[in-house]
Image 1 (cartoon, helix red, strand yellow):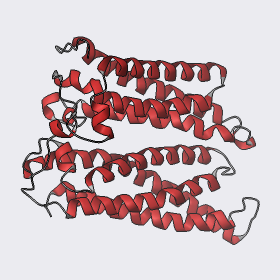
Image 2 (cartoon, one colour):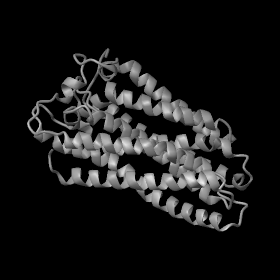
Image 3 (tube, one colour):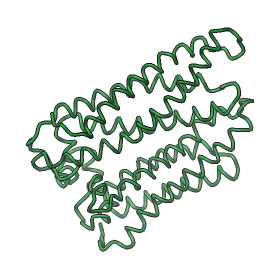
Length: 333
């Protein structure tokens, strides 16, 4: 194992988050079974106090969960000096079989935690907690994923051995490598850029339509999720090339480094934030007919729509700026 302050911080925070989410899930199960807002019993009063405490606690914990994703990638990037062949987080994560699964699951949990926070916020705005069973059902589904994430992350860090020979990002994200990621990396630039901009335009159009007409919330939510996947593929295929100004450098991690002004952090933050906000609109759609939410929900959904559109616009603007002003010219590629 390699001892590093960030590794210790990530491990301690993941154990704490997993424990508290498990604790919250246990009480969430009680709430699912015994919650009755119409009851004035002592048990109901206890449950109401508990749900307020748990909601507040989870709000902070999931905030740490958001930070842990970027801290994990930053730490993996800092560890590349310990391994022969690694030049960024790509090589460090490839050192053992747990690095990339941990990263993927942390990203999924990032998105799900964001959706839970949206549900929780909306539920707390109503006087009768109409979404309480929905949000605790989601928490029960999220809890095992948080536990698995902790196990994968612990195995990744505890199984790190200095001086292991690994692959660099140039090898992992090239036509010579095998797998889905390498196939995406070598996808032609022009078709990928067309798909990327069409997805962004479609998402923006559906968001504007929903904001103006209050229709098409599910479509906007679905397009937000699809746009996230297409954007990641576009970064691998062509967007990264313009940041590096190299026609063969497809790494999605090097843009997080100092040499490129840490531009990857605002890039990924805006993409993830836009996706969560857009997905939140669709998640709230089934509850529009609930009486206590009828006046609250439309304004929440419209705010989420605006936030999503702004963040997607920021992401697209950063990408477009680099494509236009980069010294790299891709002809017929």
